[in-house]
Length: 286
Image (cartoon, rainbow, N blue to C red; front, side):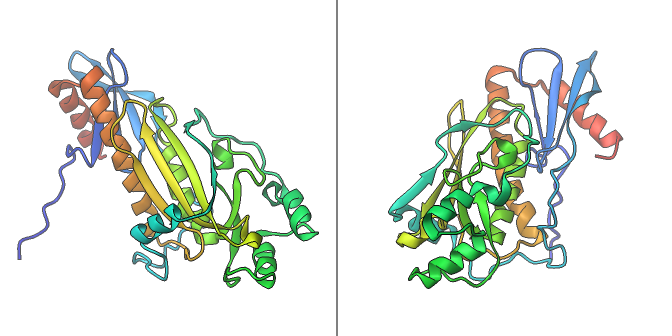
């Protein structure tokens, strides 16, 4: 049986080599979004002390012991898209630019949902307590499992606490959101992308703060296709390593191709420059 062809280091889906603006600086990104910056001097690539070379923390949300992609009862992307389109009530961020830095401020207690919970249920409740209350009041929500309050726009990306940006969803949904948010954070210095995060809410009156399907939509300001991914708020299990990094890589590879297209149109990288960067990466074991 013929062996699987191994990707070369200069394959575009392994490394993205591009230029942001005219000048000597050339950037190289990997499939997780990490990047270095180089200055090309006399045909030689010199690495600069800038870039993003580490991934965001995972806060114990990835199951490294489970080495297979989870399936569980999570609905397919096709089914989630249909459920999103058929929702009666929505909550949406609208289109927003990616933040230029990470927000380090502390989140409010209970993600700022105490006021909404008191107004609706009479007392402050956690996401799990609210889901159980909604179930007792005739909702169709399955109360089993670990529920969390989930930001549409992450607090670390400037999203507000409170009911305008928060829904209850399974803990695994928040973990998948972290994979997408971590990928988006890697492109915060590009000034090329915008995101829109929306949620189709449950129709039941007592489920007004419970998400059914969250949709991430990312666009490039220069046009082209969108990145779209749906998340199952009701059934998401904790992600495995394969699933978590697979979600991250899917968004990164889409964004890398956009950066390549922008570079080729506005500020192309010459073949000799690209070879100089690749030679440096090979020489230093990347």
